[in-house]
Length: 512
Image (cartoon, rainbow, N blue to C red; front, side, top):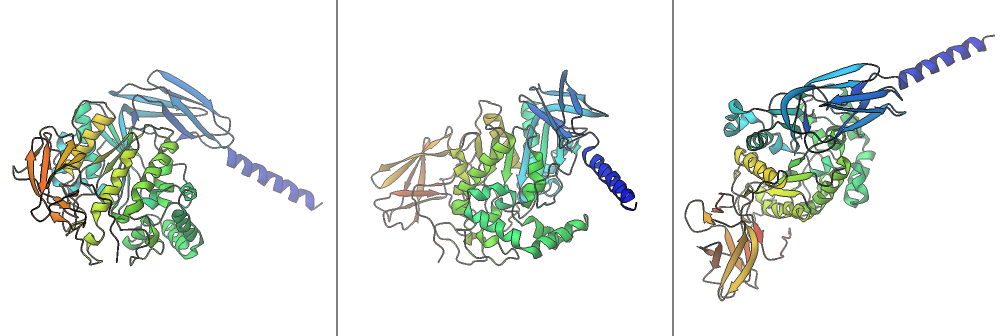
């Protein structure tokens, strides 16, 4: 007699839990909300959750798309390509209930991500801040800075009808909007001092043993995991120390801040990161609270991993033409990559010149660009204020490579080096109107013979060619240009865009 009431109660509890588990309110991803910008010219996925098998219908711009939620309650429809429109419209999402999203426009959507120089605020960049009064048709989605040990389905944030907080992202959006006169939407997901590994999906362990070792260590590090879980459970009142500790961990930024953005339709991703990975090789020790950090990819291997990272992101977005625009690291530190400082605390011991070369490897992939910042930066400040030119150049790259405009978007790049007796003639691509910004002789060139003893070159402009020589070198063979932490350069083309750094030797620095 006593068993029947118990069994009946148990059955009721199980039934209640089943209903509670599988019956959920219709809700789109947080990416779909009032004030959002949808990408023009490509299929637009719209997704969310509902009760299992609930019919969900999405209506927008004369289109109606319906589907049924799966057993897990997840649903997705795809709108056909949309035309750009500044006219605010409504999107209706209906099922057992109805949701109406207002003030929706269509234009160009970009993700802007990276570490502190992407996070760098508009308020701290005076020339960028001065653009705010004339900004229009720019909207933003600020992704909350948080972490997760599992890949999240939803992101924390919402669309607002204002420019992004990032100076680089706003500058880029401002000049892109001016060029195309259509709405621009920015998904801003950045966090200072984060490494490339912080933004890597876990499944990249199968391609990179070093990353597998890092992730295995994190999985086994109960103390770190408990510390992060404890911090997250305290809500938003994180101390600066805990904030820094979390953002410097591998993978967990991707899980919380990037994974749930996919596959939101966008034109591409701007990536401003690399400072955290700028070291000669993996394995160079660093005094750090992060026990795994000494094994992150250094500048020699960074470019190859970055290329794989781009391919993996394109797979996540199911878009092989998704454009990636990489911001080259600007000038910082003393010395050169030819004669670097040996002080391990000096930024030149990290030799940013080699990282810039590694960043350029992404150009091996289609639908990529590298924005040259070799003439920018601050010798003593890793967070320079001159973000305005970066925004301008990012917009130029987007106009040329994604909007197919016939414009000059790159500075001179190395074409070939010709031997002329005791001189070397350097020929360039994108060199129409080659000149120096200060009308003086070109600076920043070094030459060497077979001894590999580098000497500063005397440089002369000859049309769209630079002639190099050094009185102490009778048989010059190799050239390096702008290989320094903070190079002194002045060579530009007719569009006033700086020449890209390069070298023609294959010497890699060795840490003694």
